[in-house]
Length: 182
Image (tube, rainbow, N blue to C red):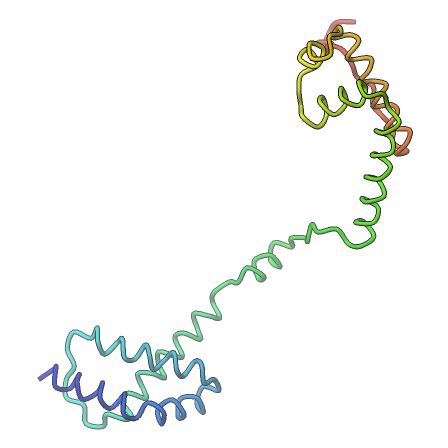
């Protein structure tokens, strides 16, 4: 008997879809929510293990769809969007504003000019050390000079760039001293 009622309800849902959708949309205030609820109603009819006798099929389908829509709306209210999460965590947009972008472009231009003023070897040592992260001993071998000379070239390159960019350069070359040694 259950399959008979299931088939009857599915047929009624198909035949009266537009009318059911319009009624739900008026109640819910959303055509999309009404359509989604009717689709979920169809799925619920498919999954229902047993359907007993239904005296008033049209209101029965309408009630199922309405309850599904209310549950969906409630779960959407409880769901946290990515924007909500960012707001709650008070994350700041790291994208630079136009002023900071212009400053960065200006600094890049100044750095490029400073690099152009250097000798090719000094420029290559600076870029290898700071941009590529190559150890000074390897840079020294590449250029056929001592590691001490590589350190001196790097020091002058950094000082030159610092002056051109108006930055203070912390001079810390050579091995670090351990605590307690003088």
